[in-house]
Image 1 (tube, rainbow, N blue to C red):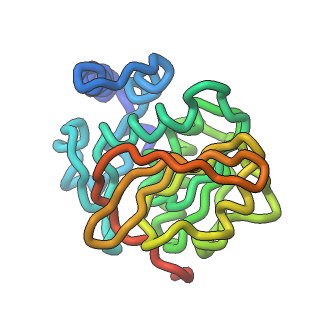
Image 2: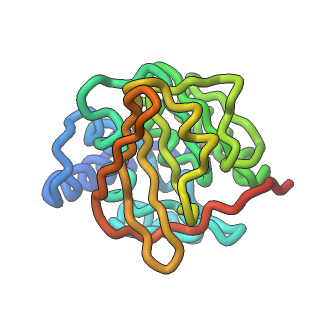
Length: 217
């Protein structure tokens, strides 16, 4: 049972990880609290659990990774800056770790994953954490989740070569999109919608797996 893997040791490890991230410049206390309360090891293969609280990305199978905790915290901090969004679209559920952080920061998370086996595992992890405000969809992240939009915030955890038009159209007026963009060189961007205009801000260089169109079982 996954729930049996959540214990006092992981709580202490999460708190130490949150402290590391604060030392590296993460300032939002709600984000740090979510990091501290999230047992990152349950989102990883057991063989890698001993590395769960290192500030590094790790493989989770299917050619995918669990993102570096600093990047998870940074993107979350950027997403909720200013007015806190009530609904968030996440493109790329992956391990579910980023999803678990978002679920502690907003009322409702809608998460799309193209690899169904990863989605099932992420769902089990979120259930073990008793997080029930996440809706999941197996589908093509390039297309977003139109029937549930518009979204006050959208976060993309893989890098497209260019920003998917469907995600821009599903962003609410005043909403923000946090997305890494590029192929060989990737830049983390904030795109804010103002009516029919989209204002773009570049944050920093990053490295993510590609956002691949389509879906897989």
